[in-house]
Image 1 (cartoon, rainbow over the protein chains, first blue to last red):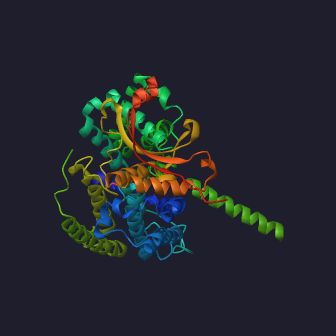
Image 2 (cartoon, rainbow over the protein chains, first blue to last red; image 1 turned 180 degrees about the vertical axis):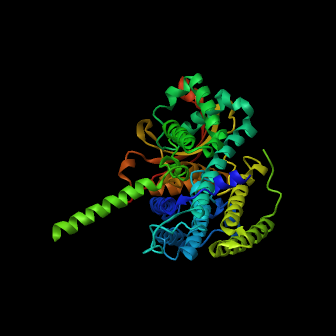
Image 3 (cartoon, helix red, strand yellow; image 1 turned 90 degrees about the vertical axis):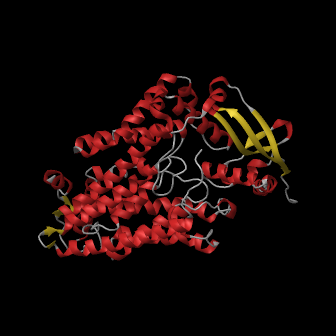
Length: 302
Length: 191
């Protein structure tokens, strides 16, 4: 028990947790910006289609148009503050709750999107941990350290990712049993999804039809999917195993894009798996590069 | 298919608010304790970490207690995507097409129907048909198409109910049946 606790609370650099804050904040900001046309177009928000989910069930009905338009803008502003790490203890929870409400509201029109769950869950956890102790306004002038208070939040974020994958595998078993791995259900889903897109005038996968002709391919893909989803907990065993699992899970999402044109951006960019990896390294490299550039320019001007 | 949720929305909302307040108080108190360092010989950072980890893990796993399809929610999901069997890959779907002289036909993209999201647009079209508003939907789409250069060769919008077998469609090239639910002209103003 003590060994397990020590492993869970093994120290990590403050920059690693700060990197998660920067990445999740930046993702939320860009993601909401790309969704603005949807929020500003009225076609989706027909009062009769309102099916409140999660925290939105607290509302009696749809929001007035003005408030609905303000939701993503306010959340974007809070995402920027979250990234900067300003007054983090107070404003980070406000951002996380705003993101929860905004995306829950967007998902309350008859169709929950499973592409946004991890983003919200990760933001909620990041908001209540010391993720602004490095690379932030709050941490200016303070030297970043390595401590157990920066390690467990990363493991908690990783655990959320892992449970989500296991749940997806369990849902397949509960609805289709082990027969799901024969590939027929996956083949039907791929065919239906692509036909739906075609009939709705949306782009569909250019290679799906070829794959649908080969049932053995579907069988192999179904087995692979189940291994990735139910086998997700092995990612907690060791960093190298985590990397291998992350690549496999990422490959699964690449396959989903290729065969169904369904994009899971949070997973495809790698943010879902970032807590399992040394995610501060690319950002540290970028910061060092910017600093070197500044020094060079300062040297040249003298 | 499972029935409707057995817990009324108001009761669920009350429970949700109570839990949220309790969690917030616990987390805030634990955060303050963690900042003070050790309390009564117990490492407060670890207590806080355990509380947050446990709450997060239980919350994310909680949908396991619910029906995989009917119990899906946001952000706590059962993740039921791609899980269900669809016998014969049968697809009943309402969709919108633009038609023109000489048999010209184009499926109207989701952003011109209801939403840039395909699935959201499907739900919106189905909801419009279910509440008897297929003609209204048809007219709204026709109004959106009227000023668009890409639809100059089309003069009518139709809301269609299609019944197809998706695998047959792609593998054998066999299309199913279609029924027109509503049709309306694309009315363009004087140049």
